[in-house]
Image 1 (cartoon, rainbow, N blue to C red):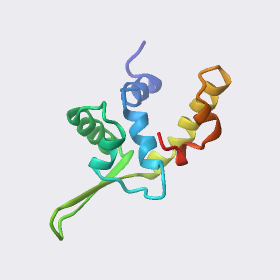
Image 2: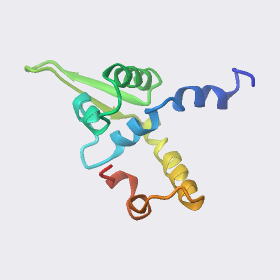
Image 3: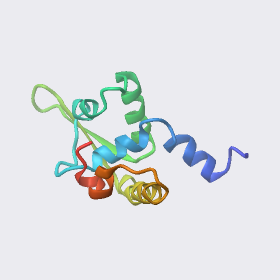
Length: 119
């Protein structure tokens, strides 16, 4: 495969472990601004190094925005999906739909929209 291929380049980045799950986590719930600790709490299996690395990659690829408020202590840093990041959500939902149709099922996923998922 040619590494200049758009699909190759896209999957090389988005296909890394945890990337889609982090994007989905930033989309979930009412609060679309999440702190590092909130994301880490949802994924206890991810190492701090990998989470930091994935967040940095997502920021570099303009999928998320990192905002820092240093006006008070402690300094508050939050992550939010960009317009480009929000455009990935229907892709994730399409993958979910495909999986449910092809017997990769979870009763919870069948009954719940990803945005309101507690997992």
